[in-house]
Amino acid sequence: MIGSRMGGMDIEGVAHDHPEEIHKEVIDIRAGPQQEQLLRLAKKLGFTEQALPAAAEQFNNLYEMFNKTDATQVEINPLIETNDNEGNAPID
Image (cartoon, rainbow, N blue to C red; front, side):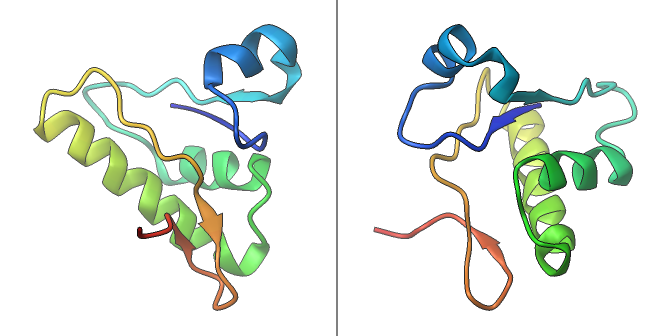
C-alpha cells in the first residue's frame, strides 16, 4: 500500500520528484493489512488523531475491494478528511 500527502499529481511523478513523500506499507497477502499498518499510513498521510480510525477503515475497505475484484491497482485521488473527521473521497 502506498500513499502520499502531495495531491494533484500522479504517484509516479511524486516518486520521481519527491521520493521522501511516498509512504509505503508492505502487506502480507495472506494475512491482509494489519490495523497498526493502516493507522501508521493514515498518520503519515496527515490525518488527525480523531480521523485515524476512519481513514484506516477506508484503507482496509480499499484493500478488500482490491482483492475481491482481482484488481491491479486501486487509486483514490484525493482522499480527504472532512470537518466531521471522516476520511472520504469527494463525490462528483
